[in-house]
Amino acid sequence: MNRIVVIDYGMGNLHSVGKALEHVGENISLTITADAQKIREADRLIFPGVGAMRDCMAEIKRLEIDELLKQAREEKPVLGICVGMQAMLSFSEENNGVDCIDLFPGRVKRFQANLSDENGDRLKVPHMGWNEVTQTAAHPMWQGIANNSRFYFVHSFYVVPDTSQENSAKIVGESSYPLPFCSAIAEQNIFAVQFHPEKSQNVGLQLLKNFLSWDGEL
Image (tube, rainbow, N blue to C red; front, top):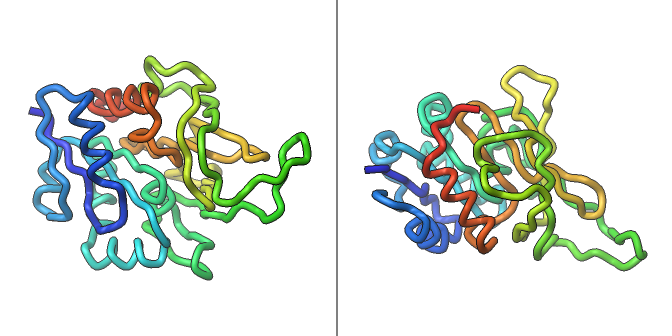
């Protein structure tokens, strides 16, 4: 039995993630919880998130999920989604600045105001809707997913990993709005994405299916 835990700290569309996993998974045990023991016992962890970073980090620290994730990074595959991805970095500019989990170095920045596309049309923030993801590095999580496939995004902030430091996350996916930004990272047993695989139809389901069989190795 493949024991999957979706970490519940009150900030995420957890049931949509859970339903998507049940749709693609075989012989899985799915639990949505913040219980530390169940998180430790899981074979794989999914760390989603939506909402304001200050509120997210307050709950993450209160429940000691930050420490559980630091322990899990060397023990089992972890998939971060949206704000879950952002919370893995060192610091976010949201809410006048918030210290994050610091699983790997980097910052979370807000899209600039008055963005426009190549035709001069204004781009709204948050970035919402379908966008291409260019696979900038090979990874088992991309198996069966064509390069430049379109995934569904909803976000006003994006991650800027510091790839120069030890234990840095590797950028494995990029998108543009209108300038390139990091949309997928990988580090040790962690794979994290800015988009929502549970809302991304077939390619998103394939990513989740890949996660259920990924052994955490590159």
